[in-house]
Structures are given as C-alpha cells and as structure tokens.
Image 1: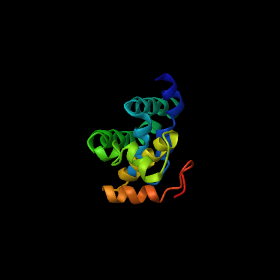
Image 2 (image 1 turned 90 degrees about the vertical axis):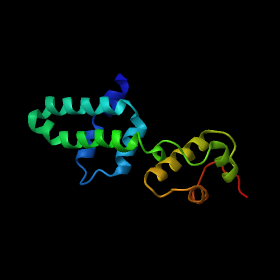
Image 3 (image 1 turned 60 degrees about the vertical axis):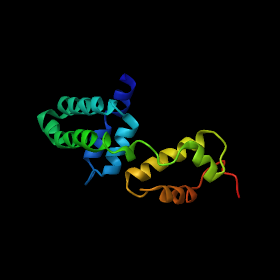
Length: 140
C-alpha cells in the first residue's frame, strides 16, 4: 500500500488541473487503484494541506468529494465498469489469439470502452474487438 500511495499521490493534483474531470478519467483512477483510491485521495489532501496550506486543501477538496461520490454512486454500482461483456475465451476465439497477456490487454480495453458507453451490448463488443490492432493476432 505504501508504494501505491507514494507513486500515485499526485494523481488527484494532476486531475484538479484539468478543465473537467470526465467519468472516463475517474473510472481509470479507480480501476487502477481500486480500494486504495480512497487512501490516495486522503494522502493527496494531506499533501495539499502540508505544501500549500488551507488554500491548497480547499482547492482540492471539491474534486476529492466528487471522486468519492463517483466511487460509491457509480463505480461500485455500475457493473459495466468492472466486468467485460465477453470472456477471455470469447476474445481468443473472435481475434484468433492464443492465451497470453494480449487477451488481458484486450479485456482491459473492452472494460474501458464499456465504462465510456462506447460498448453497451455483445454485438458492439464484438465489433469493438474486430476494430482493435492486437499484437500476436493471427491473420484470417
């Protein structure tokens, strides 16, 4: 946990510099950090308070609240953010892949597309896969 906190504690600060923090960015934050995302947010707030005083803390606080709200109201509830519509076996069949890390990469890309609303059903999932360029894919 300590390594995660140290390596990601500036992520919230970087998001705060954006004009808008999209659901895609919030989802990516929590997909990467999972439950540790809350601890990273708390450390980011502590860092802001220590380095910039109350001004920095209160500038970051609304985004921290928004991120926590997103985690509990959408990320945990919306299964599309967590489970791909297709299994690893289906990915291998559709893309003619052998078992390996490419299957996991494709599944991650599929989950991200689902979380963004670009893929909402099985047909769209298949079309999405066929549009990907995947290393190790056998040509048909």
